[in-house]
Image (cartoon, rainbow, N blue to C red):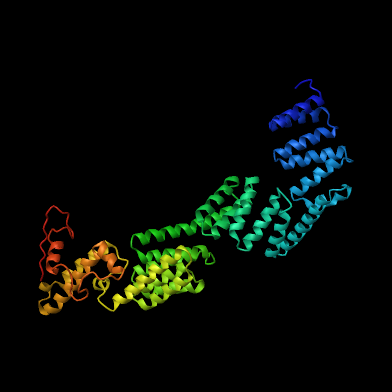
Length: 463
């Protein structure tokens, strides 16, 4: 651009700006400023480009320079007032309003904004979080790019336990300022309080990328990782059938911070399930009652009802699931009705012959658990092994066979669980198969226990 006059540079800058080539445009205007630094118009042109580029701090410098060079310009003053309001610097704008003629709406908006910010800051200092959030809401309605106000409102909402609001505000802060470490920390802490630990860890890591020694992000990252480490060990122990170990790991995780209810409450439900699996039914019910007593939810009532069914306290379970039906809404209602029906069926069957009880397994038992129970009981109660009590053993053996015949088949088990009759004389020795034939099938190469098919035969000897 050597030898180009300031007027030509401005003209080229205007052309680039119209073509949305903002980097080229600002280049021309900067050259014009260098050639003619005392011309307010050059600074004003640069202001317009920086404003379009949303580089508001540079735009503020440009319009301030233009106004210093031409303090009588009402246009420049009005543009600076609008920009200051947009940036949330309403109190600074208020100090210069007297020099602006007309523009009553702008003046009123700046006045309201300044009053709201002043009230918000006072409430924030006094830790009156509800009032602070209210006044920040009012102030932010007047501004466009006030990330400081958004960050302070996010802090107030965090203290009010409005974690979704905190996350939303800080998302806008980070979009405008991607290097805002405190925003990463606070947003991560909000995710922690919602129980969304993976998202929290990601935010703390982003903060630590900016400053590996940042105390807040470092401590918060360590805190969440310590909880998740114990939680995973609990999950792994549960999957391995080590229920007491799982319970210990989960309680250790909970006790890291017992106020962390978004983790405490769902983990307590896992503890309830582990107690039931371990046959510790009284403890399962006790912990479930704690959960419901702290805050009654459909999910908590399900856990309590399931624990009561596992403990064979069917009448209590029916009462619990009826309460769940009352609380349920929408899609939850169908599941609550289903659980109530299952509890009613279990109560009815408890007064007749209960196949689950015959085999000594829970109603939630897997096919593998049912098969194992049948094998052990069939061997124990086979009449040939109970010569001194053959008649009673024969009855017990028949019941065991009948129970396994029903529960080992998915279709008949589902019918039984729904309370439908399986046999014409159900509960009175009405099985479809001879119990001895059924036993021989499963113990002598018929595809049952310990075998690999291929006709391998097993010889069972008693005595």
